[in-house]
Image (cartoon, rainbow, N blue to C red; front, side):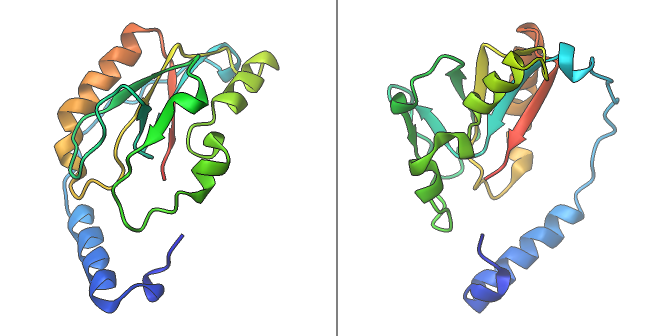
Length: 158
């Protein structure tokens, strides 16, 4: 991870300004939902690493959508089109589980720590300068997860 002190002063100030802007944005009241115990819950993964299958549309700067990744995906079929110049790709290239821990989730399910791993997982582009633009996609994604029986989602922010 890059520290603000390691960035060019103008870039560091830009990041500070973004943080202040987001801190001032109002949040809607969202009802809290108590999920079932983890040992009974179906878990989906959501990564902000900009992953997608080779045949999917690549992510582009400001992309406001998401891509669907099946649970049985071959890691060799995943590509990453994260557009941030500040993003270090070496960890993903060594082990996809760093950004999409499917193997770890399967191990947890097999050990009985979680109920099940969702049939579908999701990827968004984490370098979006305005997360409020993702509101419609987030609502659609939440409905997809609800319809497919997902109880909890684990976000792997990158």
